[in-house]
Length: 126
Image (cartoon, rainbow, N blue to C red; front, side, top):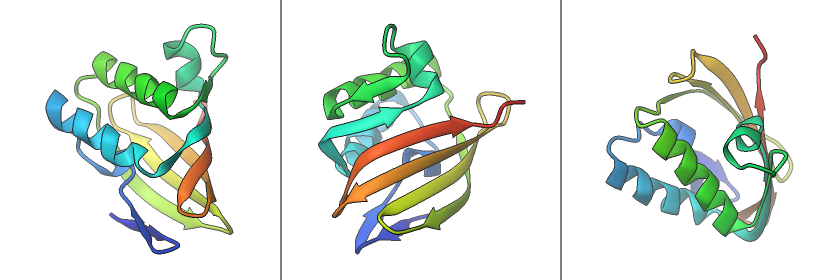
């Protein structure tokens, strides 16, 4: 599934079956092209993967490292897209993490023009 936002095609990582390590590395780069250099991203998973972060990741380089750490720790990472909700300068992506016991996740992405400047991952507690 491709989500259109202000004429920009978004291919969120949640929408792809990420295959082998090389393909994943390329996908992270492609997804990061939609993020601002000074992006702010929060995630309960980041709290676990990035010691001392409190779940807050600042900047594109740090976001790349966070995602890379997640991919290294979960070589069979798979997501199932459920829905995308478009708002004013905002996109919410709802998906199921098929690797982590089917956990439901929403990512709220806030745009400034064509770039994501803020993102927040939320998990359904079960």
